[in-house]
Image (cartoon, rainbow, N blue to C red; front, side, top):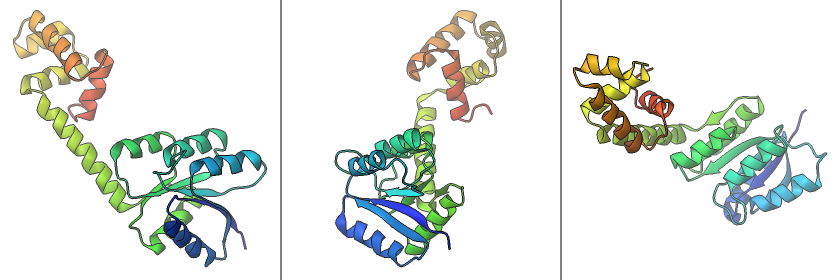
Length: 214
């Protein structure tokens, strides 16, 4: 039978002991290390370069080195190791940072034991796993941010932004909206300032984010 080497990281001993208990009951898992911070895991990886590690299961909020920094390190230095975050946090910024750095999964600490095992099995088979509650919270936050930005813009600003993203020239936008070229240039400058972007490419990205263009 194939066994998988696991590292568990959490600064709450009770939760860590709970994880240890779950995986010790499963014959396919071998616990290499339990740690209370990312610093200890990085030290272990550095001092055991030839040790095969299948997956690191980590919290986000920890002393010294947090789960986001730990994931970044693992993906840069040992990209063969899978990572699963188990956390109470459903902050969009945190999830974004992890996704950008190729985290393999994100599970809420409210998840059941069976979902935890399912997440690990899914990740070890080469797929990503994000629990339903994390996905819902993430999408709600993204939607609310989109809504807030959308509310900031007037209907006319949205019209101008949409046409800029569709690659119309300033004169063409002016003709379409029955406005002067000078007025459209003012709208463009205001949009760049309002949306805190540097150029037309930034405006186009924002238009896509707001769903004004595909």
